[in-house]
Amino acid sequence: MRVRFLSVSYRFGSSSAGLERHYQELREAMVSAAQGYSYLRSSATWRPPMDVHETDAAVLVKLEVAGVQEDDIEIALYPNALVVNGVRRDDADHDEATCFHAAQVRYGLFHVDVALPVPIQQDDVVASYRDGFLRIHLPKATPGAPRGSGELSRVTTDGADPLRWQAHASAASVKV
Image 1 (cartoon, rainbow, N blue to C red):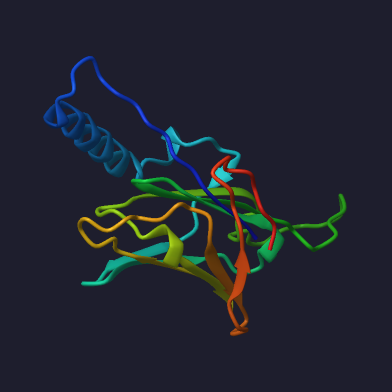
Image 2: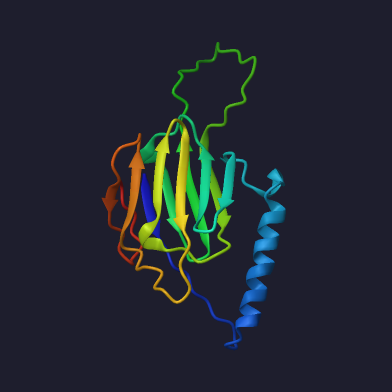
């Protein structure tokens, strides 16, 4: 599983925080409204089922990605969004004589993006993949505290002890 922290910054003509907040709210409203319309998304990608919960201490994201290999998952954390990309490969061998009676499992590239409602403490992000579910624990940043450099996080698989990895500020992908 590849995980990386990314930072994108932009500024409008003035230093008005209100205008920037307004554009961010418009974008979030547009993205959330369009998520239900499959014709707005490329037919080559699919969106796995997802739960997003918020507690007093963290934002919790759970994706159903059964049959996906850990190395085929990439997680990118932006200051205000989480993006998960990957691919589910069909392990069956199909020939021309194969006749499908049902084909409901989606294969190929998938993409999920989540607008984060609060700042995240990047140094304490934990992702685990077990039993077909990818769980990402995003602890909330405390006001006034540094949010982290994006240089250290933890990924766990199959209940193992957390593995540590480093992603430098250059946002290079790192395999775990």
